[in-house]
Image (cartoon, rainbow, N blue to C red):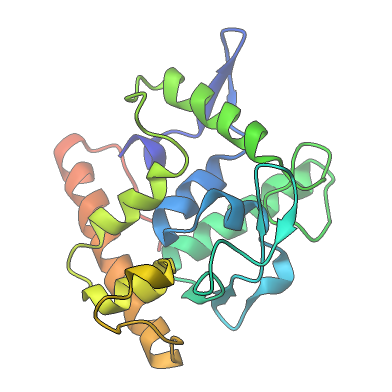
Length: 206
């Protein structure tokens, strides 16, 4: 998976580390919506759990989220923890010590338009299909976690209530959070290890 193989993008033909690389990766590892990622604060991450409290929409407004199921909790798996630690290091090197996990270059809340633009730059740099939008990274999570029971997966990604045709929604209990994390961690490790075995270039975080 290119996203975990390279953190590089290009600016005017020059390779540089993508400012949002860890946001892209965590989007895939959690199924979070772009606005939820950009609205994430360090205080939302406690006891190995990410709790989604807010989202930043296309009008740069901070909202409670897309729907009633948007507020939810996600387990911080070892792979997610590794990306969060790298994000902290990146922000520290840039002299940014504010509350936002994925701020812009000045430490301010990121705009969705900016986030999309930088993703498109990264996508173009690596020759990815144009249909892969920031929101599509959420769908990638859903596809990769194919073995996860549907009811559990729907709770993790916070699908809208009108999709609750089987009455599967409700608050995630701590056991559910840990079980979902175990499913997703195993799925991504299988995927990345398979590619590592094939081309010998990937390293799975421990």
